[in-house]
Length: 69
Image (tube, rainbow, N blue to C red; front, side):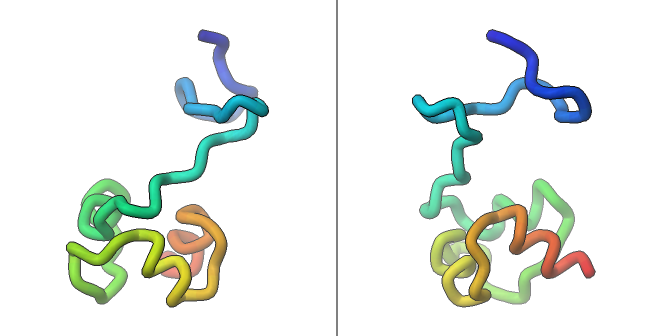
């Protein structure tokens, strides 16, 4: 497996087109909160896809940036 671009940590999962794979929508929000040390102020068993839609963003990365600033 080839190393990703300079500045990116480790190996990142990619889809068949070579683009970075999106985080699964059915991931529990509590899992993301624990991993990144952020509190979204919702139930931990809510699905990530639901929270992304509710917040009006398109990805987990945008969601994290929105709640860190």
